[in-house]
Amino acid sequence: MASIYIETFGCQMNEADSQFIAERATAAGYAIAEKPHKASVVLLNTCTVRDNAERRAYGRMQHFKTLKRADPSMKLVVTGCLAEQDRHRMRTIAPHVDAVFGTKELGELADALTAWRPGFVEDECSEERSLLLPMGGQADCIADAFTHLRAYVTVQRGCSYYCTFCIVPHVRGRFDHRPTGDILAEVRQRIAQGAREITLVGQTVNAYKDPATGADFGDILGAVAQCDGLERLSFLTSHPKDFTQKLVLDMARISRLNPRLHLPIQSASNPVLRRMNRKYTIEAYMEKVAFLREHLCGWALTTDIIVGFPGESEEDFQKTLALCATNMFAQAYMFIYSPRRGTPASHWPQVDSALASDRLRSLAAVQDRSCREFHQRKVGSVVRALVQGPSRKDPTKLAAKTVDNVTVVAPLPPTLDAASFAAAPWVDVRVEASYTWGATGTMLARSHAFTEPGTLVPSPTLDLITL
Image (cartoon, rainbow, N blue to C red; front, side, top):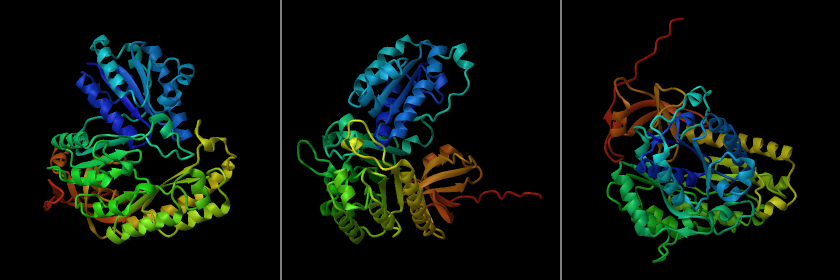
């Protein structure tokens, strides 16, 4: 049958869009391919927030030119933020791309997939394609026993804040909020399909306003939390400007909410924040965090940080470094500033690249210690986590995520398969060792629901090594 291979770059919005594309494709009669050389349609869902993601996307387009040469009937499609920004330039750089759909054209993309479907023969993989070397890459939206356990639900697209480093408002447009009724209908659909955890996503999710009623993000969190069958609720990504005391108090009333907040700080220097047009000061950010700690004690705080932003002095950087050294953040996504075409900061004098790299290494060393200390505090405790699937590094072990977003890996008990874990996907793990990336331990019990007591599992078989 016809099949589609999807590769995603970028943020949770891109992941949610890929999920939508996959669902529309399967509804049109496509299977989801695990390898690009076996697909009728190869789709790249691209990002342009950082230069590295843009270069990777163009590199993959050139890589897939080999597929087009071997079988011109294969469709190569590009969507996402880079497609929105570079739709004309892309025709020159990658003329072998068959179709380009911007971020606001996912409906048209779905219609095109439906129109193309009858033109694909049942055995798409020609002899020429079958002889190609593996193309590499990681396929998205491959359905397995665990896919349905987590679901992204988009509440808002675009952003109206125009940070001077950010291309998002230019490629995804200004705020576009979904009606509450549509959001709740999709949440109920995901729960009916087996989702145990719902993540509400938006470019600036806590700026949400219902277009008809004016209900804010705290209101939509409360409404979603009341949906029958929901076990856990999360959201990404918040902006400090809209992280209000009302929102914190609303969050404190929702027992199903995962105890983790992602609140990008970007820099701990007020002069840098002003140049970034972030619309808050470091003092205001710290006041918001203090209010969070007062009413939601024990929550994990994660963040984004940019180093080497135009004009960042050594004093500016040291303020960010000192803040991270307080172990404030359980995790931080750290990046060197990347100039984006069409943004104000791209026209400003840039920080020397070698200096920016040095700063990133220094920051990573400090923040990694914070991550390890956060994970170390779990050693000796028993945590409940939602199964992700077999560990990528060792299929004899199972990976799962705690509600505060820590990866835990444990050996698989004997005689238990994927289907049984999908039916009872909550695992209790005794944490025995911690690392920068997460923790390892021993699985003690499994549960059908987050709030149910666990059922003991057999101990894993002991490996004996003869020296």
